[in-house]
Image 1: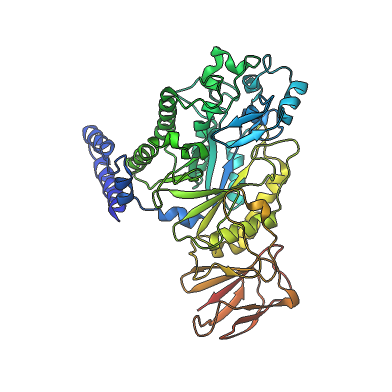
Image 2: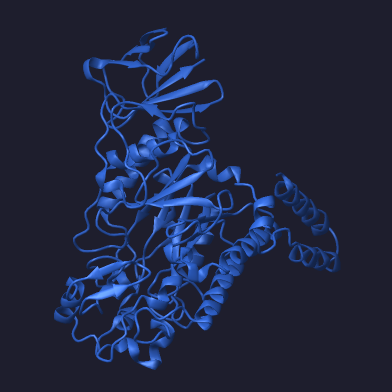
Length: 510
């Protein structure tokens, strides 16, 4: 339905008209905007009024940022705060995980930092200074990488807020960097034309930390960081904690007005069922109040948490095997082994990440690619170089990515993609026979994932009887290409010189 779109237009017109009037009229307008309640907190209302914002599907590529006090120990992963307390076998109903014996992180922490009673996770926070953090440098890098939106982690499972929080003392303005990290990034990004979002992982904070008397996690003085859950690892989430989560979420929405709001897995569990339509209605109504279309993202990890077509579906470290007509997104990290910076960080190659971007876009998706800054606020050089390589490729080939739509088929070739969350490690490298398609106007983009053998390619999906081609060129190359087309497909002879190091784009004009 177009109800939502029309209401956005009406809200915007109202604001413009009243902006020219008196202060009294301005106040009236504000009150009217605040009273817009198009979305009610039930799925029927949300399904009826929701429409995926077109702008999200046009942007295609964004940057995720995992940065917090867990970057100080720089060991294991961003789950260091949890694993440093895992001293024995642990069973968790919500994660369905069983750890056999003390975790490596637990042993490392005790050896490096001391007993977890004397030096707990809270003690890393004063060490997390971010003294070299520069929002302008980060945003400039992300723009050079070709990213169109940025989603910093606002708060991870550890409970430390990277913004000026009105609901917890454990935040980056009061402690650690003593700066509004999220706020600075929001301001800088928006000033340079970036879409700015935020992610929340806080729902898992309830059961994130192991509670035992020989840890500092049971000290009531720190219950507002480690949560008030008792020692029973499977204790249900309390009403008090849920209300704290809700207040914290509203605080983030109201004060930062994120264009994108991304949630991690725990919100998908049955215990949080009642809050999901409440969240969607509140956020979408706020978007109308602000005069913009906003994007809510969720993984539907444990159950169909958000009904089809009410949010934008997100896959963690995984892809889809074919086209999804509704927009979707993959989130993955430059790091193979972590989302946050660790001393043994292993980066993926720019080639594999560009291939991921192409494959995802051909199936109507977006890529949200994570960086892991060091605790001092610098982005490591290897991560920078990968981002810049991606940016160079997009400078040459971006017209085959941005503002495109999926074609009648996503691609052809022998290499199949694994599907689902956490499946990327099973994928094989693409070959010169693998081709992906996008389209824009009267152009079809045939993207070869590698240079074809013998410098020739037959694109079987582009048949003369179905799509008559009048012109063929390779993006980034001035070479005049030899080509022919019949009902077996489109045959193209490659130029003598490659225009780059990664995937190669043939622009086919109908």
